[in-house]
Each structure stands twice: as structure tokens, then as C-alpha cells.
Image (cartoon, rainbow, N blue to C red; front, side, top):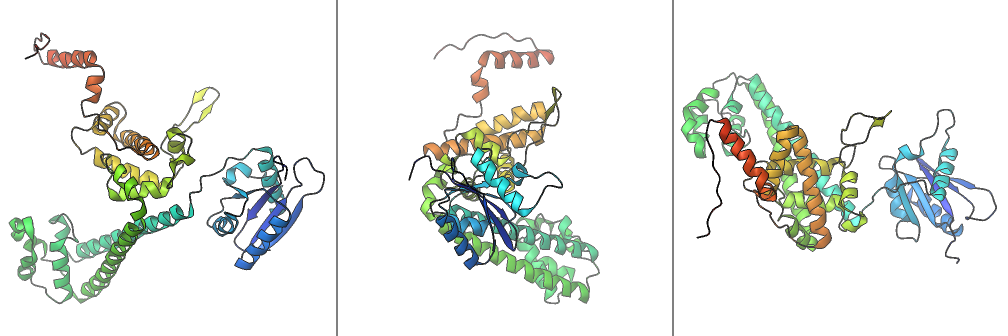
Length: 411
């Protein structure tokens, strides 16, 4: 086959149907061919055979919800060049829209090179993504149940949440289980206090003097069973994820050398970025895809909102959590970076900027297979010592002190 041979195909995907338009081979005469298939497995297999018979080389499809995934899976590794595109790139004008036209327009844009491919990681990375995102969903559900238990206590005038740091900690669980079993005495319930909370045993006893009745006990038992179930599911999924991550333990160990990045954050970075970061040309493209860079919104020469563009929400969430962890570290370069940005632009932008910095570091760590080397918390002071000294002198003089500097003599 000629190396320049190209035959492009566009697929318009819906829940129950997919409409396909195949253009003539590049440089050949002919009409575009359209066909509609269902979305069952056998329909996909017939579609794949038909595309091979037409000698299609390139296929583009919109990222429509989750409906593109089975189409991608059936066509992946079958010799086609696949492109997943943002629907905004192929949006039709009002009044000129139909499924057939949409499929043809996608194919024409593909043939003309007007489409930017979305990043689709390997099937292994996609499965890891689903597992880790499901774990987050379970955590959110458990947190909701936790809040329901807290609200139930408030309704019954039990102020335990005002005394204990974690309502579902060892002390909280002991008290909840005693309440469910029928214990009502604040004196006996306060015996469940554990650890450092024993110093507040009297305060705990006062917080348990409420109007807890049989109705509250029924609701608490239901909420607590659900909380325990979700906790077991989370633990189970974390064990499965750890097992699935075993082949990539070297990459995980490299990532956790970055301050603020623990094992769970490292797992998310690998799953969301894919197991091979060379899919991104450089760190700037990676950060742009993740939505961790300022957006562009300029009109008539005026710069409007610089709000971050939409990107990978899960990765953004994990990076901001890691940035919060870094803001509480000591004597680290990333902590110093966070403080510099915070002083000039406030903590919200400092958190995003620190998350961006973490992603850049993680990209280079994975690409070069080298651990993170800590520059130190005084990195920016050492970067320009003259400026640092001048600013410190100005601060001391502002306090009414006279400062005279002289170089230290070597001992």
C-alpha cells in the first residue's frame, strides 16, 4: 500500500446508535459512504469488519459521555489511527445539524488536520483510573454518612462533635456502638473515652446529656452500618489498587521522594498521567492538559479573566491536596515557593501554583526516572543573596535598629 494512502472516517456516537461517514481515499474520486449501527457488541464487530473492508486508516470520534469507550475499545489495536476529540471542536451551527452531517464533518476535519487529539491512556492506566476514582466516590459517600451522624447527634442535643476532633475515631465509634446497644447514661458512655481525650472526660460527659430516644437510635444504627460497609469497601479497594500497582513500584517510589506526595497521590499521578508520560511533548503540555495553568481570555487587546481552564478534575484535586500538605512542611523548596506566591497573590493562587510546580516535578521525575533532589528551604535566599540581605536590613531598620554588615571570616 502507498505510504501516503489515507482514508478518513468520522463517527457520531449516541447511546443507542452510531453514525459513520467514510470519505473517499485522499486523492481519489468518489462519494462519502454513510452507515448507521446499533451499540450492541455484535454491531460493533460488524462495524469493525466493514471499516476494514473499506481500508479506512484514520478514525475520529467525539468524547460523548461514556458512550465512546466501547467504540474505542473495539477499534483499539486494530491498525486504525484513532482520535478522540473535544465536541466543541466539531460543533455544528444551529439549524444545520443532523447525525449524518456531524459524522461527515468530523471526517472532513480529520482529513484536513483540523482536529486536536485528546489524550487517551493505555487500557491498564484506564482501569487504574476507574479504581482510584471509585475509591474517591466511596470516600465522598462515607463523608456524607459521617455528616448525617453528626447532624443526628445535633438534632438529639448531643454535642459530641464539639468535643472530639474525629467523630468516627476510636472514642466516637465506642460511644456510637454503646448508644446503638441501648446505653443512655452519659456517665457510662463517657467511660468509652480513649487516648488524650481522657483529660476531657468530664466535658465529654456533659456533651452526651441530650434527648436521645428510640427514633434516634434506629437512625443511628442504619447510618453506622452504612459507614462500616463503606469503610470495608474503601479498605478492600485500596488493597486491590496496591496489588495492581505492584508492577510500577519503582515509579511510585520515585514520586514519593517529592514532598507532599504520599503513596496515594503517587498512584493517582500514575493513573491520570498514564504509565508513559512521553505521550506529552513536555511539562507545559502536561500542565495545560491537567488544567493547572492560567486560561487565555483576551478581546480587543484587553486581558480578561485568567481563570484556569477546565482539565482533569481528579488530578487537579489530588495536586491541590498535595499542595496543602506542602504548605505545612518545614525547610522545603516547595514550602518556600508557596510562601512567596502567597505573599504576592494570596493563598488560593498559591495552592494552584504549588500544585502546578508539583506536576512539573513529577513529569520530569517520571520522564527521566530520577528521584527528586531537594534544593532546600533557603533556595530563593541563596539564589540572590544580595537582594535577600538588603531586604532583611530594611526590615531591621524599620524596627529602629542600625545594621552594619561585614563578611564572615573563615574559621
